[in-house]
Image (cartoon, rainbow, N blue to C red; front, side, top):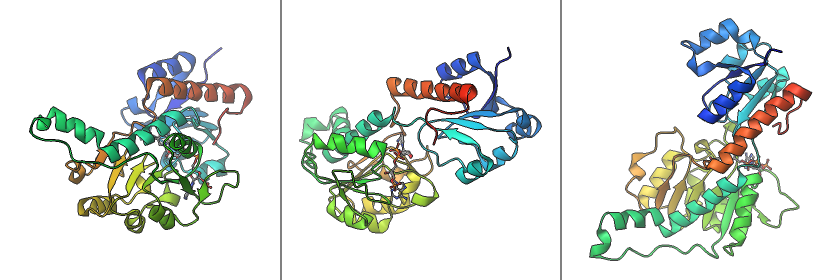
Length: 312
Ligand code: NAP
């Protein structure tokens, strides 16, 4: 029996690419000399696409895939997919939720601690030999501080659970109150920022949350407040963030994501109260393996039963 045909939009790990190629007849779009031309000529052959929260599948690409039935995406973000178009055409889409909650929440706590206690900057201080000539300045306490979470979904809740171990009062903001949540709801994001010592962003990216964290929210968080973003760069007005940090109007920032990755504002490089990470929230051996396995399981479930395990 011939293997099902799959269009893979972008390269994932070598291990995943191999596993996919062993099970299916894979066409690697990124390896085509002219990917868009390839899609124009061959697109009608594909019912199945594998992609990721990074590569997505654009409206232009979808226009060349008239017989597409399902997209299995690696990662939990869905901002690079035209969801309305997918819905209108009845194209199913799956992501890889839950398996990455722990690692992303761990990283959020790591960013809170690193930014407040300046671990990375202290490490640079030691390596640069500066300890030989003096002590490191005092930093900010973490335990017992007030934590505001923007987006109390799967990852946001995992962050809140961890915060309990640090005796942090937790409040959250999202579009609607979660009546079963033990944490206080803030309908007004600025009010939450005014209350919080640390504000962690854990909502989806995309048009609906574009620059949700704007200059007013940063001003409300204030000169002793710390912003942590493990969501998407688009959620934060990065120019306003840089200005607030350079002016000392914001206490610090721990950032895993940026507006134009992998470009990071160089103006922040010299600030000890800013931690800059290269979008590594889910980037552990254990979690990436689980995410890969879930993409493959979703694809096979759709082929076998017409249903995915974790549809969006
Ligand atoms: P989720 O379970 O869908 O939770 C999203 C939360 O955001 C929900 O509480 C939702 O509540 C809230 N939300 C949605 N739209 C909002 C808006 N306009 N304003 C305020 N809150 C809003 O998603 P998740 O699995 O926790 O993942 C969250 C995001 O983390 C992903 O979308 C992804 O972009 C990011 N992420 C980053 C990394 C990384 O490597 N740094 C890794 C994984 C995920 P309401 O619907 O009630 O508003």
